[in-house]
Amino acid sequence: MALEPFKVSDPLTLGVELELQLVSLSDFDLVSASPDMLDLLGRKPFPGNVTPEITESMIEINTSVHTGHADLLFQLRQIRDTLVKAGDTLNVGVCGGGTHPFQKWSERKIFSKPRFKEVSILYGYLAKQFTVFGQHIHVGCASGDDALFLLHSLGRYIPHFIALSASSPYFQGRDTLFNSARLNSISAFPLSGRAPFLTRWVDFEHDYFARMEHTGIVKSMKDFYWDIRPKPEYGTIELRICDTPLTVERAAALAGYMQALCRYLLERTEPAPAEDDYLVYNYNRFQACRFGLDGTLVHPRTHETLSLREDILTTLRSMEPYAEAQGSMPALEHLYRTAHEGSDAHYLRKQYAERGGAEGAVDAALRRFREDSP
Image (tube, rainbow, N blue to C red; front, top):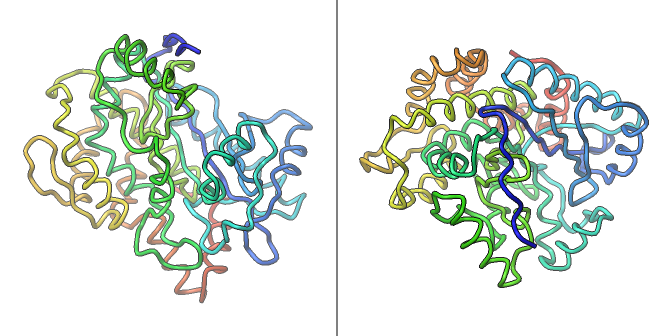
């Protein structure tokens, strides 16, 4: 099946997807509640879209298409309130976080859907270990060429999004010493990591994708688990690197930041992306996953070693005119506070210590998801 043509969409429009945890309120472990949750939510209009994920302890919500941060945040809050109400009816908690602190992958159940069953057969136990939770951000592009330009230009800022969204310090009952341990699970898949360095959509479509399809390895763009990937059916570029934050406010702020960055990058005032930019990509990605805001990165052009936190703060300041133009200054203000006060990973470790264990950290995450935050 040939790759479908790149659909032209309104540039810089936004959409967000969040993978969310379904938690038992008796023991704070994950619970196989998505069939019941989806059945309940399907009985009346939902303020976005909600779908199953690969295991029954997860759901995914999708927003509509938005032009700015305020409307996106408003809808995310509507979705959250609807989910919380449904969860209360079923006695099931809903929360963010990139991983559940102590669930056991062997206890997960694959959701009964043909694609999920195919993935389970292909990847074995990795499919159940894929019970991790991410935020995906879509930004509209005027062409496939613009999408590929943004894909490679955003590589420089991937560590920012990892560090600012990091919310997965615990995995299988242990502190991993990572701020984002979730990405280690995704890296196990053979078609993960970064996209190949192609800058023209015609080359991507007729050369790379066609050849990959001919090998039988892939059938559609869904088979690629890249950190950033084009989505031709939507006419967007999709950032997939973020952990699901603990609040919808942070999810909206990250989307607003990406929108401002894309507006800036599309001015093409910086040198065009080059394949050599990826020489430091994996190192910078690891630093952000392992150390979060306290990590370092190597600038892809100058090879200067930079403080990740200071690089984020400097970039946020330089993005202010672009955020202002999109009406997204509250998004940057939220991320300024995050950079100074610490990520959700920092919050979860603090809650673990104060509440005496992983159950207390999950309870804190459940409470944090329910409430509005600045």
